[in-house]
Amino acid sequence: MSAPAATALIANAGELAGRGMSELRELALRVAGAGLAACDVGLATEAAVRASNGSIEIAGRAYPLADDARVIVVGSGKATLAIAAALERRLGARLDGGAVVVRDGEDTIALERIEVLVADHPLPSERSIAGARRLAELAAGVRAGDLVLASFTGGSSALTSLPPPGVTGDEKRRLHELLLASGAPITEINAVRKHVSGLKGGRLAARIAPATLVNLTASDVAGDILDAITDPTVQDGSTVAEAVAILRERGLWDDLPESVQRHLASPEAESPRLGREPHTVLLVTGRSACEAMALEARAAGAVAQVVSTELEGEAQELGRMLAALAREAGDGDGSAASPRVLVGCGGEATVSLGRDGTFGDGGPNQEAAVAAALALGEGAAVSACFLDTDGSDGGTEAAGGIVDGHTVVRAARGEIDLEAALAEHRSGEALAELGDRVITGPTQTNVNDLFVVAVGPAEASV
Image (cartoon, rainbow, N blue to C red; front, side, top):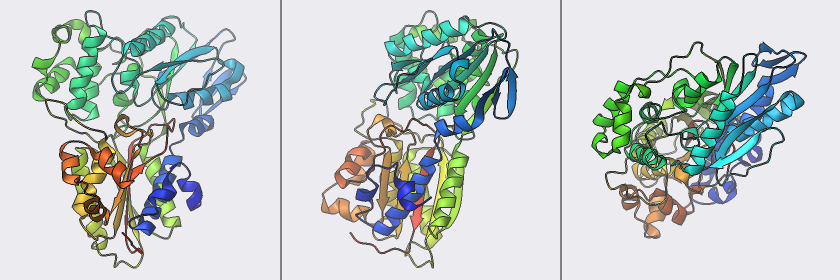
């Protein structure tokens, strides 16, 4: 893959590489673009699925179908539309219908056999409830011998949100608000949400039985934990007791609506035990994206190192840690014989907003970028790029941010207070003023967040 091809998915790559430490920025963007290209779930679906006489083959496993058997698609999430479109292309007339729920604001397309419903993210809405009800309705209508292809990807918890009996949509939305503002990792957030739901925690899979269920998904969770990725259609590994403990440890219990507290004290909060575990195919993972980035870095003449495929934690701390690793990799002075590139990925970094929940424009990747810039200080021959693969970091128009060893100097000249931007969670505003937001537009994928750190030598200019 050439440098232009690798950066084609980053709409403003040329502009971003034209300031600061331009050569290091160009390298970081080239490698990040290769990682983003490797996250194409549509292509991965086409490679994994094919129809033949009397069966459908998925990732090398054949599923025989009687003549009257139906093939139905259900799903929700940021990467789901691309998977659904690829399934229509591959299966054609053998596909009998279905529905998927996608995020408002995406470049949606009408499909011939699958309904495309629009809902809201990161907080659920009435449209999210309607979408969830439609999926539950389809699941209730399948029968033994049918094949259900489920595609739940990152963002599905908000896009398809079905409150359990006794809990209103507004009360469930309040639960989501509290969890997202708490700074809890996604595994904890999902552990709670699965027990206050009519769909999650394997409940949709229970409705689909006794039809055959196959999951096609992409991992946006560190460690590729299935019940945190596609939780409506796999066995829940958490318990109500664990969910309640999380809420208490995070200091959220007393702020919950009373209806949610009552539900968590009832037997209905426990997730069902599924009779059999469905086959799950991880079409794209952070690991495969990291491998693509490392390959691109080596093609550019750099020494590549995969730091981690399971990074999690507070965004600011991750940014500072990666800046420290970059300094160690090249002594921070650009004296290495050839550039080094550190790549990695992980679950979405967390941002703790505090009790009042006040924040400005930004997201975890942009916050990590600003924290890295401050940790690098002035003159370090390093450029760091942080990227949300769905193209919308923290619900903003930016996918992430890029910084380097001249960012603090440029910020000072522009009277941009990076420390205040971090403290007030306005990282996106600071990066926008610097012109350092990474813009991709909607990508129709959602894999682990990616980071690339390029370490000198480089010709640098402010």
